[in-house]
Length: 281
Ligand SMILES: [Fe+2]
Image (cartoon, rainbow, N blue to C red; front, side, top):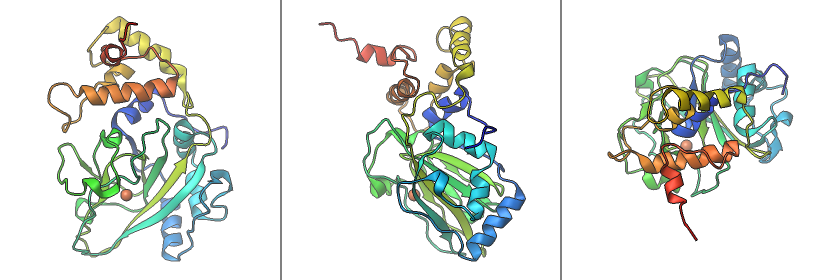
């Protein structure tokens, strides 16, 4: 990874912890999108054995152009370290007027690690609504399900159908629920997916310069429940499908992951996890 990579901020990491994904619209410039589309059409994009360091992958492939963008390097380094392992890739194709959609699923079997893989989803061309981009359910990454076990669920509140410009990239937690929507146009739809495994402990890998400032601002300005853009604020934002009272189970799950990522075992949001840990001897 080169020195110019643009690491994520603490606020962006909190967003990833809370929602299970980050979205970067039109991040990849048109020349690289076109090079990758040509590579796909010519069948030139191929993967590597699982477990290969990413630094050894895609040399001579247009995918390398994507991976060397400073923002892509920063996203990868912040979430899974400088040289994660290639797990698998796939060029997902939705045929024109395909007539069916994929069932909602997670790309994993039940996986209770705090450590997580990421999946980069890259959309090399514009995806209008009728083309049926990937559909995501924000905040679903802590509901550890087995692959298609949730396929019967449809139209969950808060779901996001990806409608995006060419060059848009998603970075997903491996547990997030998603599916490929139906393509109702007369054009093929492509999406390139790349799964990466961390090769280092996922501990403060992002740009943590703002971390203490985040906490201090939260304590001084709100000392509780405010909407101040702080880590605590971001981790307490609810998704529409959460249980009605407070979404507290998901907030607890988020606090656990934030503690894992920061090493700060005293971190909490509104005492939700601390209460569960109170076990006087
Ligand atoms: Fe999938």
